[in-house]
Length: 348
Image (tube, rainbow, N blue to C red):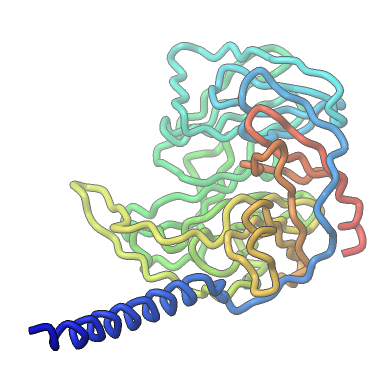
C-alpha cells in the first residue's frame, strides 16, 4: 500500500506541471498585443492645451460661429452656450421654443448666420430659430431621418429609410420645398436595415461636399450637393466588411449583437476629414492608445491618408467630442472645453 504513494505523488506532480505549463502558455498568448494589420504615420506628438473653459452644464457639440463667437449645444434643447474662439467668456442663451414644438432628445443643432437649426429626428422635422428675433419656424417632415448635415441656409442633406426596400439612402432637403426631396442613385438599396452602413454625416464648406464615414467598416464617401458621388475612399485599417446579423422585433429591425466600432467621432474642415479611430495600429504602444484619443487625417479631395495625432486626456478624462475650426481643435471633456492649436495641419 505504501509503495503506491510515491507513484501517486509523481502522477499528481506530473499532471500539475502540465497544468501550470498550459496556464502559462494561455496567459502568454493573451499578453501578446493583437495585430490589426496596419501602421500609423504620426505628424505630431500629443497636443498642448492652449486654453480651457468649464461650463455649468455638459456641452455635447460645437454648433458653429457667428459674430465673433462660438456656440455649443447642450444635452437639453432649451439653451445654448456661447464663448469667444479663445474661450475668454461665457454666456447662456435661452431658447423660447413653443410648447407644441416637442423637439424630443435626439437633436443635432446647426448654425448659419443668426439662424439656429434644430434637426429633430423624433418629430420628425427641423426647427428654424432666429437668434435675433426669437421667432420660430417649424418645418415638419413626412418621414424620419437618422443623419443630417447643413449645406447652406435652409438646405440639408439627410439620411433616410427607403419605404419600399427598407434600406437607407441620402436625400437633398430644401426646407422651403420639402415635399420634393431628391434621392441619391448610388446607395445600395439591398442593404436591409442600414446597420452595415451606419455612420456619421458632415458637410465641408471648403470643398462643398457632404462626407459620410462608416462606424463598422473601413472607409468613407463624399457627395456634392446634387447627391453625385464624388469620392469613395478607404481608411487605413483593414476591416473591409462586418457580418452584421439583423433580427426583426415586431415591425422594427435591430442588430442581434452590435459589432465593434471601427470609427467613431469625426470633423471636417478645409478639405480634410479628422476621424477618431477605435483600432490600435501595430506600431502604437498599448498605453498611448488607451490613454489618448487617436485622430487619423484624410483628404476629401482624393481620399489619401495624411497622418495621425493624439488628443491627450485632460484631468484623466478622454475627449467625448471634438471639432476642428480654422486650424484649431476644440475638445470636450465632460463640462470642460479645451482649445488646442493645429497649425501643423496647414502643410498636409
